Length: 451
Image 1: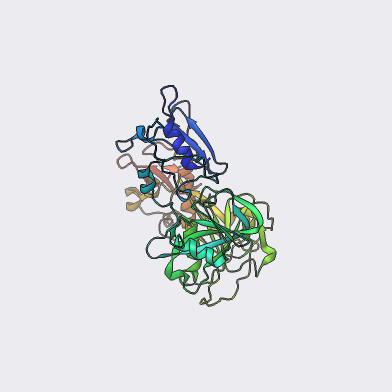
Image 2 (image 1 turned 90 degrees about the vertical axis):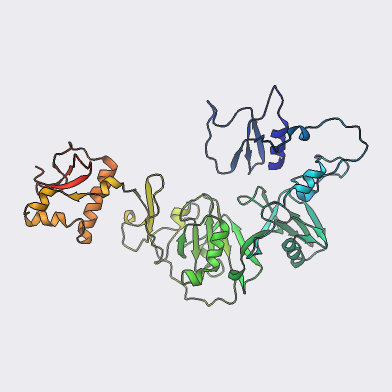
């Protein structure tokens, strides 16, 4: 069942005995589950699930539910049928349609998302060899070439007839156009067919694809190991693809391939200096995360010397991204923004390094009370021993002292500061300098003689 059919079934299931209050749609298996209660109504709970979406019908003033309910009619005029390009209906015999809609609905229904590009962007196509979109053929054209299929989908027209095209399959002179796209960008399912090729429309900035081909290669669930030159945060697949196209200007290297991890929120866009053509032995399957591998070919780009793969991870194609990803020397990142109380960064693994000192690192976010440690009036007025002076240089001294202060702040952030207010407590393991909570400001201050 399609998503639009699932929505309609919920809208029509509003009888006194059972009224649909919410539904969950499984995009992978195309399963629709209707519920007579909201998802957060006890004892029910809403949980995050990657391939499923939760919906609640909204019966506002503009929603005329009565007009959607089937009712007997005395007119002899034939009902208006929804065009296949405007619905998710599959192939039928043409004599007994499964769905009837009013003329107003057919005219006002907007074009499916992803069929047209915004101003400043142009259509390009991602080609997946050996696959076709399963049971999502809305318009079929026989006796066409691959180039003709691309032109018709790009223009959203077959001759003069309008066409809502988000993707198409090409099989031995046949174009099967669809307003749907494959998961995870759409709701359709890819099915293996060695004689077919699946093309999906992608909107990219026009200035980035000058000199590039119209069709780019895409491989679902495949990755290239060992040549990740840059790892960035990307909100969408299109953004990651555009960053690869613009890598020469932004990052200073020529990106020839990339991987996008759909389920990751950070460090999910990986740009490579090599591709499966130059490093075929390192092109492997990824069976843990949802990922797409893509390649670009743009003639106007100036090639850069290939980077040598560096790292200490062992190649293990079936063990997931953490084992397969080997980073080039320029992929160090700064600490990310605080999210759920933690920050993240990536440090390159050099030969001989302890694995705990490199790779993806996490830490607790620093809180304001701990970060505002100040010098107490007692210390400002009193002379201190040389060792105590070294402790006070933690605030603005050498990197070694800064690391010691950061470690102290991290410990206090994690475990708390257990010391009576107004009392100088030991924190460094000696009796020169300690910490105390100022009763007036409620802030932590340095103090003398904690023992």
